[in-house]
Image (tube, rainbow, N blue to C red; front, side, top):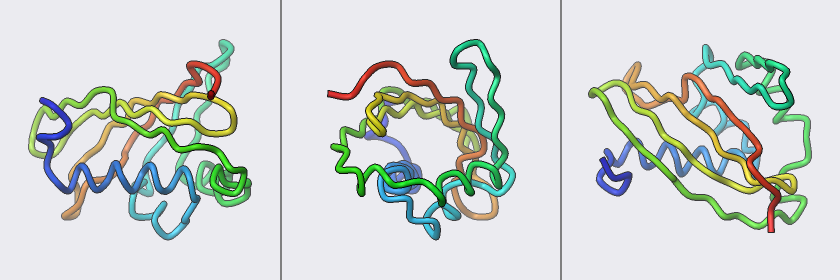
Length: 127
């Protein structure tokens, strides 16, 4: 399925996701990331596992890409919805001098879409 055909609530979640990562609005963070979500990465051969609380604290205590003057180049590279309650989104964004790509497992729970799991990787340097 093309992302443009996605449920408007999914498109809103991903727009909010991009906003959260650029501006670090923590109220919006709490509406995007489910409190039981976990982030994973294996950059450099080291497994990094960040539960919600650890990730939230890191985001809240760093200088935002907006404050650093990072250019926004957000886009969705891939989208797949396998049921009314589960989808996968592959966004790309630039922040902190890098081009980042993620796999976001999103779920519809308690009447809204949430990021439940995120796998992330720096795939290049920002322009």
